[in-house]
Length: 102
Image (cartoon, rainbow, N blue to C red; front, side):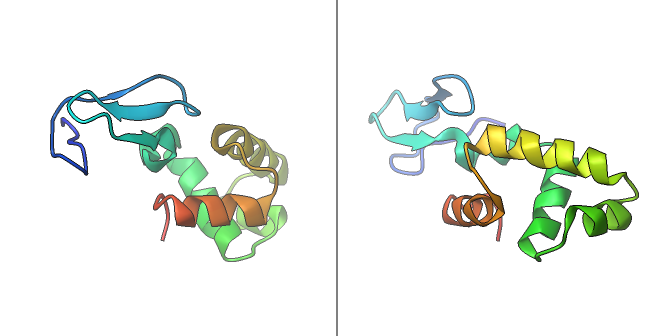
């Protein structure tokens, strides 16, 4: 699927690379952070985020998803790195603001 620029609807909308990069429209120059592109997060990472958003602990997330608490910690650490966030509150705020989660 070709993504179109939200500003000018041009199909010339390319990533400048990396999750900290930007998506830049070659038509009008419109630029957005790649954080809006949810495909940078795996399905399991999104499942963890949904439970973090509800205030669940790592232990409870592990129980809900059928994985170990250490595996949850690994996912959360990876999510923080991918989203350039420092803690759970900052993560949820950033993803809500960016439209990645509801």
